[in-house]
Structure formats: structure tokens, C-alpha cells
Image (cartoon, rainbow, N blue to C red; front, side):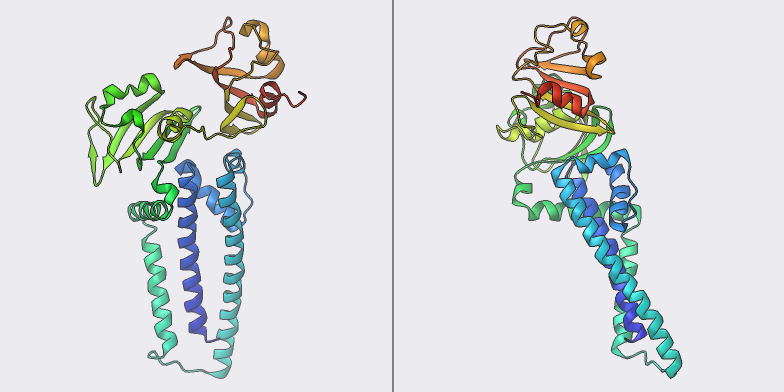
Length: 337
């Protein structure tokens, strides 16, 4: 292979490599993975470095992210093999050119191919400049959303960062929930119905002042702070009657909010109170001592109750709790039933 053709090909492959990393970053972002965590995880998966952290649990325990991760690993491996082959080919081509004292004419097609590949490579590097890269990622997000019929019919939530059970998230309003149609922020009573606050609204190329009279419009991009599960309830689950949750076979329904090593932050829809908690106040249940589980908050009849020693779990409660995943599953699903 001509040395200039080999160099042109490797520049083209590296350009595609860098572009594909951006595409996988956007794919992870559309699954709701926190923006600050994406670049590190994609680089680890794509290069096959095998660097793992507790944050990898956020990928391993979500079906969509796991599928994206598998595709990312396979694609990265294929690119690694191609690039290595081209590098070896360049060295052989250089040696062949030297030994045969080859002369090159800059007007030949392989020089044109080289300059085109160099231009594409420099353009991809240009897209890596932070402000340009931010615009480029938003462009890819719009393309991905518009390409998906499902994406056009639902809202897209992107977690910017987690703060325990709370998060700052960006919501793209492809559909306005029923509670928000033709009403102001004050009339929505978001802080009462859901534990969330609207921090800012971007509409087109401008930022809208958030006041009590502000109304949502289709296409708005909201920045919201609050309980991550309430953000999902308000802008995803409220669009239809079916709760989108990670369900474990059994009577009670478990939703994974976040993983912290061997522990998990979970939400439980209590349809049957476990016998260990039935008619027992928290002080008598030994929930913390026996299972190492802590109740964070209880949602009962649209009201939030912070559990104390006298609180009793009731049927119909929606509980946010923290503890070992195995213990939570055993207590509320009980594999031995």
C-alpha cells in the first residue's frame, strides 16, 4: 500500500474513532447518565482499559445503558485492530518507499486523498473545542431524538449530577404533561406534588425568566433540581398510566434509583407490608440493626413523611430507602415465599 494512502486511511479512521466516541457519549446521555460521568466511562469502555469504579454500577444495572456499553466495547475493539493494522502498514510502506527510492507527485490521487483525510481529521479536532463540542453534542442529541419515533413522543431526561437521592437534571419537553398544560408554574404546584424545583428554562436560543407566571411550551429545555424519581414521575411516567420501573418478580414493586457499591437507593411501592414490619413502629422493627436498611422518606397520599421511631409502614406507601440491595429484595420480595 502507498504510504500516503496508508496515512490518509489512518487519519480517516482516527477521525471516525473520535466521532464515534461523541456518538456513544450522546447515547449514554439520552439514557439519563450524569454528564460528568459519561466521558470517563466511554473512554474506559472504548479503549478496553478495564478501569472500573462504583459508577459502573449505574451502567450494569440499567438495560439500555448495558446494551450501549456492549456496543461501545465491540466497536472500540474493532477500531483498535484496524488502527494497529494501518500503523504497521505505514511502517512497511515507508520501508518499501526508501528501498525503492520512490518519487511522489503531489498531483496524484493519493495526495488528494491524504489532504482530504487531513482536513477531516482537523475538523474533528476542531469539534473537540469545549464550546463547539457542547453545540455538537446538542446537535447529535436532536438527530438521535428526531430519528426515534419514541423519542419524539416522550421527554428526554439527562442527569447533570447526583446529590444523594437528589439530582440536577435537564429535561427536553417533547410532550407537556397533563398537569402542566395551559397553567402557570404557580398553578402546577410542583413543590407540593413533586419534590422538584425548576431552575431555568431555555427556549430556542434564549433563556426564559422563571417566575410564578411562567408556562411550559413544547420544545422547552428545563433545568430541574429535586428527587430523581419525582423528576421521572413528573415528566416521563405521568405521560401514560404505566410506571416505568425496574421490577423484581413479586407483589411489591422495586425501582432502583442509584447504586453505591453493595448498597442501593431504591423506591418500593408497598402492596403488601412485609411480616417483619407489619403493624410495627420503626423502633420495634429493628430494620436498621437486622437488615442495615434506612428509610429515607415515605410518600403517603401525596404527602411526604420523614420516618421517625413511631412511624408504621402501611399498604400503599411509596418508600425511598437505602441499604444492601440483597436485603431490600429479601425483605420486600422475600424469595422464600
